[in-house]
Amino acid sequence: MATLIRPGQLNMWVFGYGSLIWKVDFPYEDKIIGYIKGFSRRFWQGSTDHRGVPGKPGRVLTLVEDPKGCVWGVAYKLPTGHEEEVKRYLDFREKGGYQVIPVKFYPRPPLSPPPGQMLLYIGSQDNPDFLGPAPLEDIANQIISSTGPSGKNTEYLFQLADAVRTILPEDSDSHLFTLETLVRERLQLGPKHSHTHKQAEQ
Image (cartoon, rainbow, N blue to C red; front, side, top):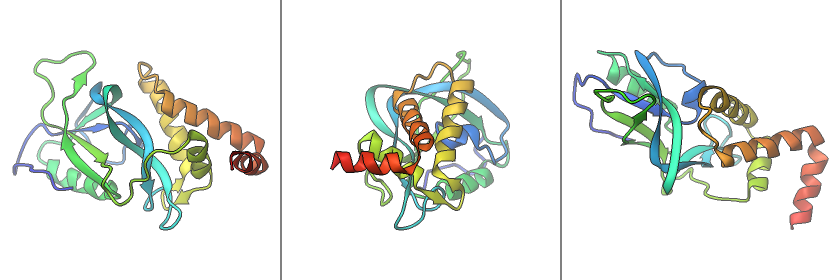
């Protein structure tokens, strides 16, 4: 997860596309709505430290490369003079398989000059917690059945979907919203439906 940050570097930003949108438990100096290109959200990252446990991981977001993709999110400017301290906290929070990479950010509306260095936490496909693709029905069932130290996996999904609808109405993320619909339907119908549906797929 190491990223080269020069001592005393100013104007450091972090781009949030998942829980960093709705669970902002760190100080920041400013925030900007905007998007990045070349990626799409996917619930392909396993979570054994927040929304699941070892042996029974939850599913949380990462980004996958997508030449036509566009992900909306919130960019946070880390407090001047405390960038490294706050980044260390975020490194710990995102320690479950995530690494940090620089990314180009497109603010809404455009700014001049643009924000400084923009950092992105991403779970790469070679990290040990990466679960990869699966049918949305299977991902939905895994989310329903998973709970970890930070709470239920369903809370993560619902909080994010609500936040994206409210804060980022431009983002019509079909993966996110289809998954939310599947999970809500299964919770309303109860566990018998999920079990029956799973048997029918076998």
